[in-house]
Length: 422
Image (cartoon, rainbow, N blue to C red):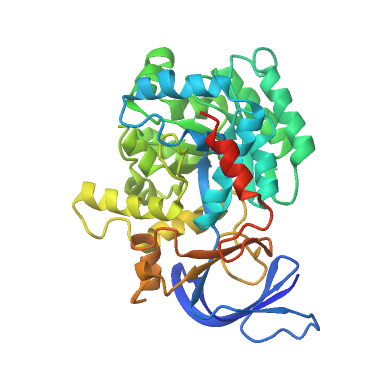
């Protein structure tokens, strides 16, 4: 389907700044073909009148565990050890693959409903996240959480699961990443093996790193190095990798992230709620590190709403620094859109509205009470929007939500199945 979108307000990125302009937008075969005057290509278009709507690039959630969505609010206000070992892990142990699928699909619904069109996921149920993303029509980069001492012995079963889901679920929208879990669940040897496998296959890499004080102190005690230093020595950061959390970083860690071209993903709600702290985002940006934003799971966040995450990110850093100009709305949007596309090797294809980019678009009702009057649309996306303003979502030129309805998802079935998991 080709579309001509008229009378809308477009969120554009020009010369390093987001701005809004009223203009027409043309989409051919899932790609933005032109902005402004009608191209002379003879194509036929379905007209969409976007009066009173902001059209923005789809948001990229750079760290999720979609299978955990049904665990929302089941482990709140408890210490981290209680949260993980007594509340979360027992539920994970008894979760079935079918339940993990519906929980992941519920997560996809929430992400779409709040303007996310692409997500990076780490999971533990073969194919469930990928199947859910495919059903929802979402763009996804998915990794099986790998653990163990040796990828080809005690870690082999998970690697085999990963290989099977790659063969079955890879598509134009669903891609896969190597995803060793963390330094406390994977050996240095496994990280090195994963790095070599990823290089051989030409795949991206992701892992958790330096999430808590305990993780860093245990790593120093066991290896005499920080988690980031261990990842660097293992070769896992060669060519860059996506590191979730990065709350507790040394100056040497910052140097390593910069020189390897690695990406840090801050998860402000999850890190704050679990008492792990606030990542040094401003310091990372000052050091030229690529920083993105993710929600983590609903078990620790408790939403997958990137509008909430963006606002919280800015305000936490303003409050901590005592400066109202810390992490401006422009910077936060850049992290959620431009920096995320860069981390995925998708610059100028994702996170932007421009010719040649994928038509991953979010239609926002500018007449929503929470956004009105439209005094500063760009800053309102960080400080005012709560996700309810999202009316329709398009991914790869296809509507995955149109006027609040999901064309490919049986929402009643998803709610029923998810509601009886716990």
